[in-house]
Length: 132
Image 1 (spheres, helix red, strand yellow):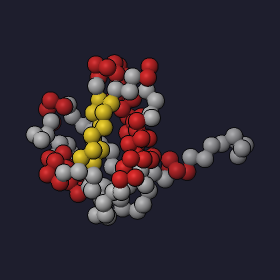
Image 2 (spheres, helix red, strand yellow):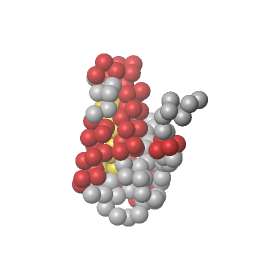
Image 3 (cartoon, one colour):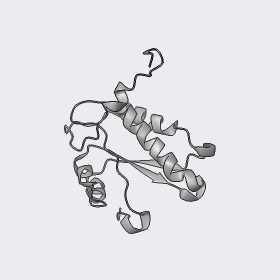
Image 4 (tube, helix red, strand yellow):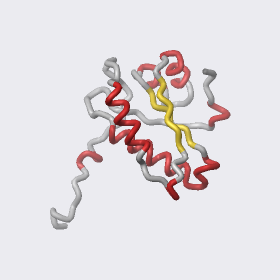
C-alpha cells in the first residue's frame, strides 16, 4: 500500500492500559481536557447516553475497587472517571456509544509512563452499586 494512503496509527497501537500510578495528583487542566474529549464523542442518533462522574474521594475509590475482577487498581488511582450509561435513552446502541466515549477518554489522557488511563466497566448497576 502506498505510504501516502496509510494513516499513522502509531498512537493507537502504542496505547496501553496501565494499572499502576505515580502518586502524583491529576491537574485540573488535564482532567478537564479528558472530560471534554469524552463529552464531544459522537453517538448514534446524537443521543450521548452517558454521564461522567469524577471520583476523588479515597473511600469511594476503594469501594469502586471492589466492584469487579479488574477494578482493584482504582483504589490507588489519583482520580477516577466513572462512566454511567442510560440504556433507555441510548437504546440498543448505548453500550457501543459508551465504549466510544471511554476510548476517547483513554486517547485524551496524558501518556506518561506509569500513570496512563485505566478503563473498566463490568457488572450491572443494581448488582454492583457502591454505597456512597
